[in-house]
Image (tube, rainbow, N blue to C red):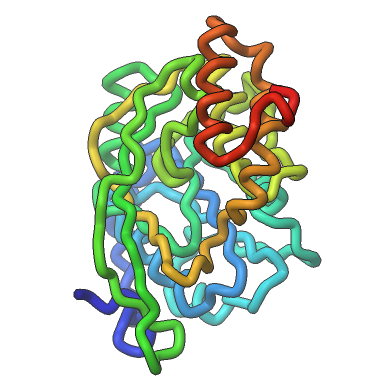
Length: 293
């Protein structure tokens, strides 16, 4: 077992670790800029791990749009990196994940955009590989696979967790109707072009406390093909004490009927979508007919 956070966990990089960037300025200037949207909330002890996974990418031309959702200030963490690619903003009040990601969307300047939560990581070649496939496929949206990293609290260690198991986190192909029934990937897996988003100008739905990323992918998919990359290039932490940023099961069950109804007009094969949406509702112990489905 590996301690992944806490007193013996992630260590901040030494000052000036990224000063070598100036030597690579010609390489960086020839690469399209990727904006990484990262919301954070009361994760001062953990957000540095996620930031570090981005700053150590083989693909260097990135900006990290870090938005603090009115939680504990992480300026101290940002300052320890000494890297101008981090753009740090703070909400005056708590806006939840959807609202905070919308704040970040207002600030992105890149040609391409991806998401990363403050408790997840990208592996070292993630962005380079995704951009390579974007160019090779002539695509505007690609998505990969993620590992689900299961964490167990470590007794007597503040913010201490032990990684006890890793497994594949979703393995779903892209289909215009299937995405109306189930999500295709965690939020950290897709990379999409700015122009693909501008086709829809759909923002994250701030009425949702969960599944806001799934709703965003559905809207994006109405005008763009999602190219599936069968490779694992990121890790999503799932903690036994249920301290993820994603919403509760109760919130998911509340929002799912609303989303299913909203998306039915998008269906190419409506009968198939209705039947599979009902199956998904029943699998959660709910009665679709009582929910108007």
